[in-house]
Length: 391
Image (cartoon, rainbow, N blue to C red):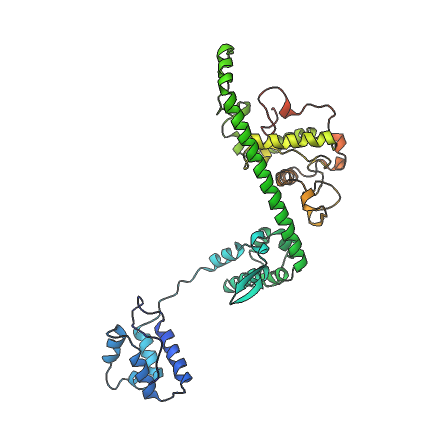
């Protein structure tokens, strides 16, 4: 009698295979031993029922003349009827389509270059494309464009730029897989450099905040004494009171087009000149912004300092370098020389909501830099850069 390496109990809590899977395994074992004698195969199946199990008791109770005692095919039919497979939970098609459109790959994953699939190293973007195609096939949208727009919008730029606008899922994954490796390596290199700069900036801002807090605590006793001696008639501003007497939730709402236009014009007017002194002033503006604003502050409410020498927002400028004459996808400026992410996002907000209102002065930053102007965030009072212009 050939040995078997699988047993069937008829109890889902004990079985690793269904009745169907058990019978498939039995047939494979019989073929492996070149056994075609029905009596031997039936006896091997009987011996593979767990001791005192439901399956063993069921088989023992079969009538002596039952066909399941004589042929493997009849035994399989009877076993599957007695111990049917559990119904598989099927996802609705709409859910499958939604899951395909929400599939993501990050720059961190692309930076790993390869992943292991069945003991084989494959490129990360190709493995991702294969997974997307399998999901699209399961959702029966492989030859459709349903959901591709939202999917492409969340791809890393290096992959998004390779995607055709109206490509089907099948064509889209092929475009992703065909992205040149040299282009991927270049994008990963830029990403790592950008992350390094961001971490350095975060560390600098944290250090400045810590220094500022330490200085404020050290000066607190003297400030208290002075306040007691020269207390004004009006109530001093509470530490938790919003700047400019605004309502606590005023800056949580999206700015109106009129407010955004005023903020943009004021930010442009306060842009530092492209000179050594101007660049020093720009660094002070950036430092002040981070001291006065949370990292998730609404840029349509607080703006962001503009890099000296760049074009005004809404002038058709490149959102990567701030210059006119090309689009972001064609920008050749090295990543370390590009404008900060928050400035890029502020420019994008202005451009998408206000249009090209500054196109006529796109390359002339001197025309919008008021010589000797006092920035609204340096005027008298409690205002700081990022608190918004006076209304």
